[in-house]
Length: 205
Ligand SMILES: O=C[C@H](O)[C@H](O)[C@H](O)COP(=O)(O)O
Image 1 (tube, rainbow, N blue to C red):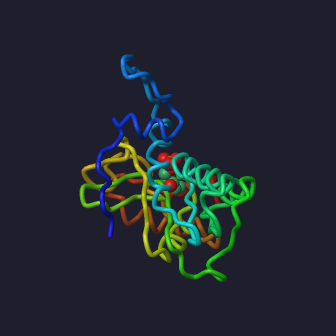
Image 2: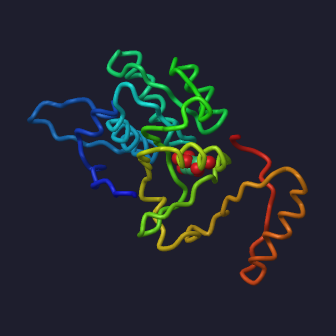
Image 3: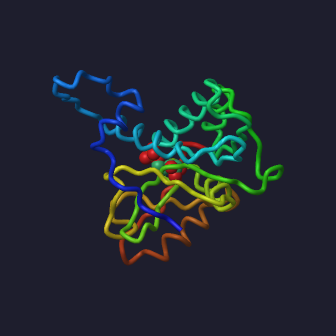
């Protein structure tokens, strides 16, 4: 089940927690322009508040999840979190987590994931998601499908009236075996709407 988080982006407190704003004296007025990446960072830091010591964590992939993984690493280094085990959803997140000293495992060893944190590409009004446009769809589905709780971090640019509403590519992960056949088959399902199946040749795995 997904629950939308209350809108907190205008909160000065959240910006301070993410290190984007320094406390000012009560008499001075605060004026700060936050970039989209700053907003992602604030949202990611908020998501990490759900993390508790001893948890097995699904570590997401993408420009938003990256901030959450950094924050988890930071809290571990500060000793504010202990005994965390991360299960990365891509090789790039694996590398990032390793560099931060986050102990890692996999679903074979830890089949139950307490909490997963990740971003999304689209969110409809019913909180259905498109994920995987960054190229790590299969691992995300496996890790996030195994979690007890999933915190999905999105900014307003991801909100759509219906899935596909962004008009951007709909990610479908296929096996290498006869991928051209699969591409043709997929495209034939949506020929009338003019969809074209294209092989993605870059991104996370
Ligand atoms: O495969 C990539 C993942 O599904 C990402 O979580 C998704 O693409 C969102 O990425 P970003 O936070 O960079 O917008």
